Length: 302
Image (cartoon, rainbow, N blue to C red; front, side, top):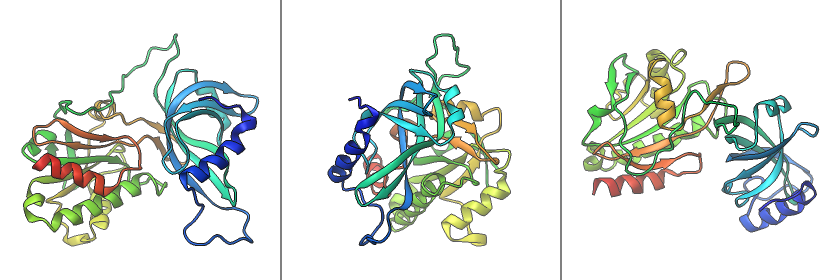
């Protein structure tokens, strides 16, 4: 579907009712016109750009908790990004939405990552692969939090759940959310010793220059809650070398571009890998739940 700008507010009000959007938990305070903006992951194809108004017309997938799949214009938080966008580009981004009593307002995009370019005169230096069930996972090599080299092949015979982060990520709904979800999965698996032995968790940083083994050890032990007592036997934190990094990003569809003040704009990627080294499930957004992944684990180990 395609909507003109004049239809956006009416559309969003309807979407808010249909999807049960609420600005915060509990009873809204009628004296407050707006609340803190909420963040939503977006994935879609650029239809056109409007530099005069700082907008991009985006044909996007459904945004869980906000609206169904549709085509509509969005403002860019950083209008200069428009010069890098072209019709046909596939992007991921973060949608910021303020809310009032009527629903979501003042929509704008930030953290835009182009994961596939469509310009006829552009020859991409890399082609990103979208993981699909049954795909064989290459034997990537990484350096873990204990300064030891590991590879994915060594986990054959176990179900591996892997996600991508960088430790300095400032967005609560991105890397920190992935790590909190993994902490919950790890804790749940501990309650089932037989299942625990058949699984392994792996958090991979795409920022190996900063995320050294020492940094990853500190970051990981905080999320496990064991701090200096953590042995990392079941949940490891690792990073590929700078040479290996692009190959991992391309295979697991992790788009990363430099942001402001040392931050990285990036897409998300979480996978479940079966005992045979093949993809079982792929989650390209942050809307997956630990319960969903645990269900895939149970299925893959049964």
